[in-house]
Figure 1: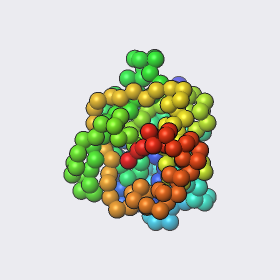
Figure 2: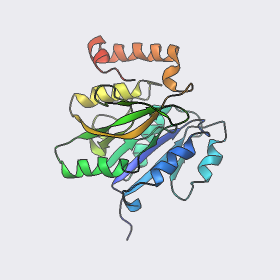
Figure 3: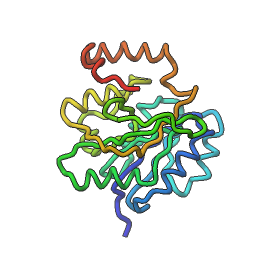
Amino acid sequence: MNREPLVSVIVAVYNQERFIGRCLRSLLHQTLSSEKYEIIVIDDASTDRTSYALELFHDAIRPVANARNLGLAASVNRGIDVARGSYIVRVDSDDYVNANFLHMLSIFLEMNGYVDAVACDYLLVDDGENVIERVDCSERPIACGIMFRKEQLIDIGLYDESFRCHEDRDLRIRFDKKYRVYRLELPLYRYRRHDSNITNNAEAMRQHEANLIRKHGLDLAASNGMS
């Protein structure tokens, strides 16, 4: 009998042929039993060899292909819509995770029914996977490495698809009004810093920062700053 997975991992990818394999290999080698999680990969109409890279993992993932580029927020929402797990966690396509990532986050939620969501600390790494620093996720939160209860994401309306960046900050502002993200003091996520990070597009970041302020006001937007 096929059981529904406990965890759905959402990976939205656009033109990451170089790093997507590393990301998926780290997710496939988890200490959490394989039948307890699924990996949903949304290819946002990549124009490089990402689709070929995904073919190598076809039997191990649930692929979703966008016919046209929809943006990160819409792609993640598509993944959540088809997710079968009770818990949802995002992993960026150029990042990777510790082997205990899914087990530790899911058991934290399983054993603490009062916990709405849990985030782990992360290691900031360069393209060579050299560790730059360990980061406290409560001081410098990022979009990924946070395991949510699916029904609560649905309750707050998922990601606002009008945001092409800062979609994570908008979600956290809305989430924090009703729920709480707890911290797990273990660096289980690997956040890659390199020249192609979307957050390095300064003009786009400024435009969406202005959108965030218009939607939530200056104080909330400022208090929810993310790297």
